[in-house]
Image (cartoon, rainbow, N blue to C red; front, top):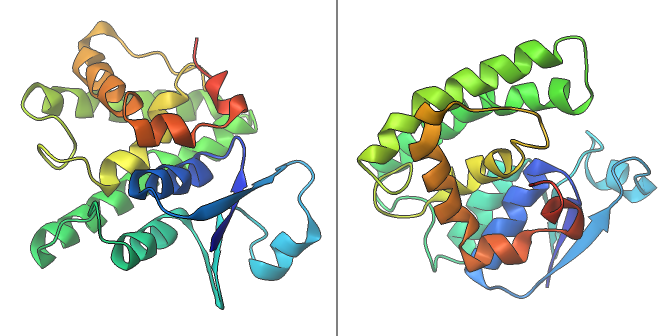
Length: 198
C-alpha cells in the first residue's frame, strides 16, 4: 500500500491527495503537523517537506513528480495527456504555474513583507487565465487533467490567502466550482481545508 505523508493545510500535499482520490486507489494518508513535523520526514526527504510518497522501496517528494508517478503507475483515469506533444505542453504549463503562482505561496502563508505584492501578482496571473474558460471546461480543453489538479488547491484557498478577484474573473470561478464538485476533490479535503472557504 502507498503511504502519502501529507500536510493537512499544505496545497502541494492537497494536489497529491486529489490524484489519489481521483484514481480511487488503495492508499494511506499520514497527516503531518507542519508546525511540529516528525523526525522521519527529514530522514525520508532531505528538504524536510511534505508531500512525500512511499511506495515499497520507492520514496518520492515534490507534488508534480509524485503525481506523474501515480498517473503512470495507475493509468485510469489518465490525468496526463497520452501523446508526447500535448504531454510536453502540459509539463511546460505546470512549470509556468509553479513559477508564476505557487512560488508566491510561501510569502502569503508566512505573511512576509512581500505578502501583499505576492497576492497582487497571483491575482493578476489568475485574471489573465479567466477568459480561457469562456471557450473550454478545463485547462487543457474538455478533459480534467493534471493541470487542473495542480491549480485547484490555490483556487480553493483564495479566501484563506485574501486574494480577491474582480467580477471579470467569473469564468475562472465557474471553472473552480466544476473542480470543487468532483468527488475526488471533495474526498481529498482535510477538515482544516474544508474551513478555508467562506
